[in-house]
Image (tube, rainbow, N blue to C red):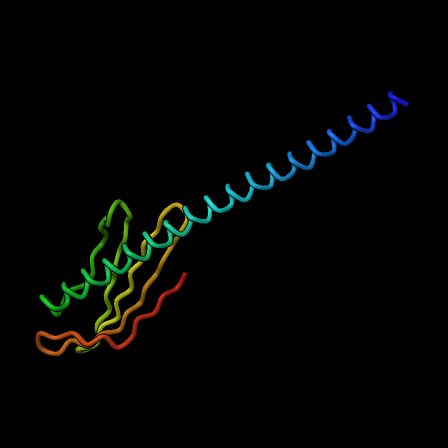
Length: 127
């Protein structure tokens, strides 16, 4: 009878350890997934910020020179971006793109330049 009781206790301990190990493994995998998600969101934010900065730089270029054609490229906090400009009279379309290892952001803006003012007509983002 003592051997049987000892066996039951041993099996209960092993089951308890297996369940505890399962929960620990689950917690580790959830932590890793959350960490990767956070890194991805940081990359998305960085790419969006860089593309926005390129749009702003192009708008300043248009404000200073109506024949501004865009900037070939610049780095914003180490994130490369570029912007191109198409003009039709006083209306301009600016397209900017920035990318990191895990994210790409494109922004298209339609503006109208009147004298020394810029009117923002449309701002759209693609992923």
